[in-house]
Image (cartoon, rainbow, N blue to C red; front, side, top):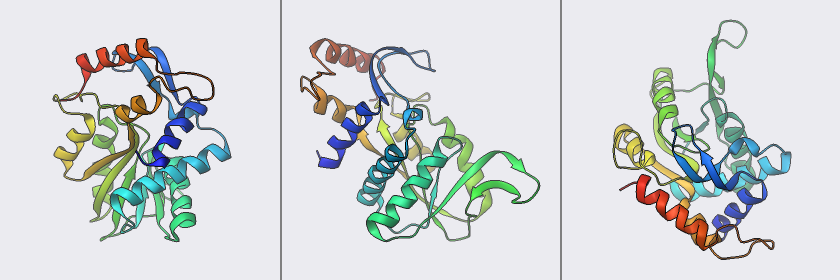
Length: 225
């Protein structure tokens, strides 16, 4: 595992973004872990988050793209922080763009926030986590309606590795197969377990054998094929 991935997992734990216990997800599934990217609230957290996304995007897609698109609302700070990090780490200037939930009819009119999209732009979509692919279903037609762009791929922070709503495949694989662009995550849940299982971090074992058994049981029921 790359060092920045282990650091990112520890960063999620430190930021109380990734938690372990008993949670009921929006889908109704009972899960032994939960991720809430809304817990990134400080300047330092957002700066580090942008750097982790920038490294993962660089590893997966290189730097041959023009725009980072962050679906509203959580994708907006992700796109801004990551665009800044790409500039600082790699000296590459990319634009950020997001959609508005409501079309603005005065001043900076339209459905887009940030940069406009132009024909020929290469776009990377950035999100926190994708469980069902619903947000891509909403934003993909918005992006394609603005200009003739090429979507290079999607980057999320955590691949939960559970099946989507339409098949036994994971949500990321469903998106890839449906829309035809690559999908990746900074880390997978498998990597989280490998990193934290029976390994003390700052004096705490976050995934002991009991929790590991709960995670294994969860994936036996909901894991992607």
